[in-house]
Each structure stands twice: as C-alpha cells, then as structure tokens.
Amino acid sequence: MPRVIRAADVEVVLEEFPPSEWTDQGWLPGWRTAQDGRRQVNVFHDGPGEADGLEQYRQQLQAAGFHVVADQQPGGGRRRLHITKP
Image 1 (tube, rainbow, N blue to C red):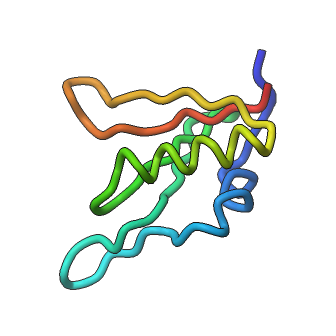
Image 2: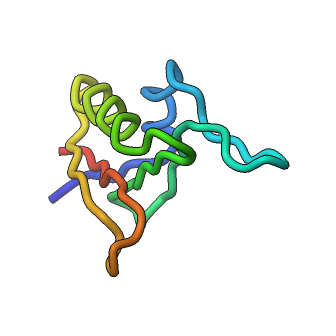
Image 3: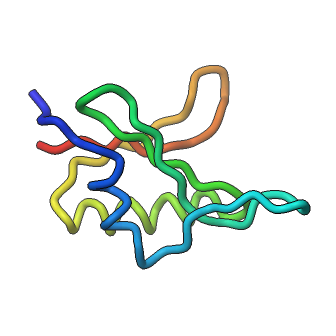
C-alpha cells in the first residue's frame, strides 16, 4: 500500500521546471500539482507542450524514487501523472 505523500514533496522535485501561471493571455506552460487524498498527488502540465512536459516530469519524479503512472481524466479529459510513494 502506498505511503502518505504531500504535493509539496512532489513540487520540490519539479523545482527545476517552471510552474504554470495564469496570465491575461492564457496559461504560461508549466506544471501544477493537485493533492488527491492522502496517498496520491496528480501532476498536470498547463499550456502548450503537454505530452513533452509530462514526460519530462515523469522521468524526473521516477529518478527521485516516486512511483509514477500516466493517466487521462475520464471522458477524454486532461492527461496527468499519478504520483505515489512506493
């Protein structure tokens, strides 16, 4: 069973990449985390380059020892990464 994880644990690993930011002209490309219960954090890429961004985050997070599963929200929604601690 996965252990407790916090979004802040994931954000520390992703610090070398720019976080997403909303401006008047839309999203600036980057990552965003969302806590999903006590044992999972979801990572999204906002803005253009979603597939490439998620792949970079996946590699970085796996190298840091996290368990990463690529997923897509139901109904053809946004792609995301599910992050847990093994």
